[in-house]
Picture: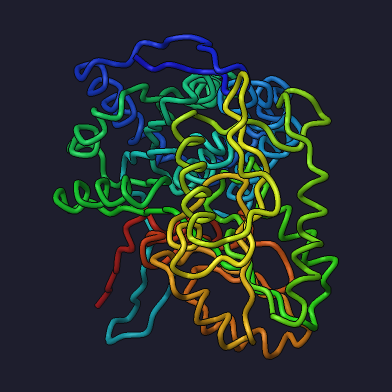
Length: 453
C-alpha cells in the first residue's frame, strides 16, 4: 500500500494499492512491447509528442502545483515554476535531441567509420519526492527522445503526482506505454531492476539507497546513473558582492524548505567579513514565512515527513552540543504538521554533525575561513561532491579555484542549479554519470561503432 500524507496537516490523504509482483512484471512488459514502435519513430515524431506533453503540463500547472503542495509540502509559488521547468526540459530535448545524437564520423583505416547512437530499450527511473515533476522529466525527456521507453518508479510519498505525470502523456496523445507508472513498494525495487527487460537504471536519492541500487544493477551488468546527496560548500571572500552573495546563499538554502541535494549547506566566509556576513544571513533568514504551502505568501512549507524532521533536529542538537552557536531557530515546533524552523548555526567546525552529514532541511551552517586556500580545503573535506559555489571579484582566479574544487559543478558568483542545457551530476558519494545537457542524453544509448572497408 502506498500512503500519501499531507505534511502541513500531518494527516493521511489517501491509500493507493501497490502493484503485485505479477502486475509489476506485466507493466514492465507493456513498456517493453512499446519500445519497438517508439524507437522506430523519427526524432521529429518523438519531438511532437514531447511538445504536446509540455503543453499539457502547462495546462495543468495549477492542479499539479496544488498536488505537490498537498503530498510533499512544496509551496505553491515554487510548484508552478517547477511545472514550467519540467515542460521546458521536454521542449529542450524535443528541439536538440537529434543534434546531440548525430553520428560522429571518425578517421580510421576504413573507407568510412563512425559512431551512431541508438536507444538501449526499456529503462527504469527510481525517483525521489522532493521535486516530483522536475526530477521525473529530467529522466524522461532525454531518455524518450533517444528512443527508449521509460518505467517510472516514483517515491511512495507522492503517488498522485506520479499518476498525474503518466496521465499527462495519455492526455497529450503519446503512444500507449512509452511511459509506465510503476506503483510499487520499496521492497519490490530490486525485482524491478533485475527484470531482464530493464536495460538500465536512473536513480535520484540518498547515497545509502544509491549504493543499494548500484549494487543490484552492477550484479546484473546494467548501466546506471546515480544522482545522490550533497553537502555543497558556498565560499564567500571579502571582495565579493556581499549583498548579492547573501541573497543567493539564502535562496539556495531554503528552496523547497532546504530539501534539495544541491542546496548551499556549508557557508564558508572569509574571517574579515564573517561577523558582518553572518548577520546579513540572519536578517534574511528571519524574514522568511513558514506556513500553509497552498498560500502564495508562504516562503517555506513543512518538511515532507516527520522522521525527516526528527533527524534534522538531531543534527541541529548534536551540532549545538558540540559548540556551534544557534543564532536562529533550532527548536522543534509543537502543533500540527511537520514544520522545522529556519535555523542558522554559526562557528561550525569540520568535525561537527552539520558539516559531517547532509542536512536536508532549512538549516544553514556557517564557518569562518582565513583565506581561499583554507576554504578549498574545507570544501573538499566531505564524502560528497555534487555542487559548489564560489563568490569573489577576480573571476580568473575563481576559475582556477573551481578546478580545485571536488564537485560535479561549480557556480561562480551565482547559484548552483540544474538546467536542461547543462550536464549535472556528482563525484564521490554524490554519484556518477550525468543528467541533462548533451551528456545526459548519451548516458542511455548504445554508442555503436560502424566500420566500412
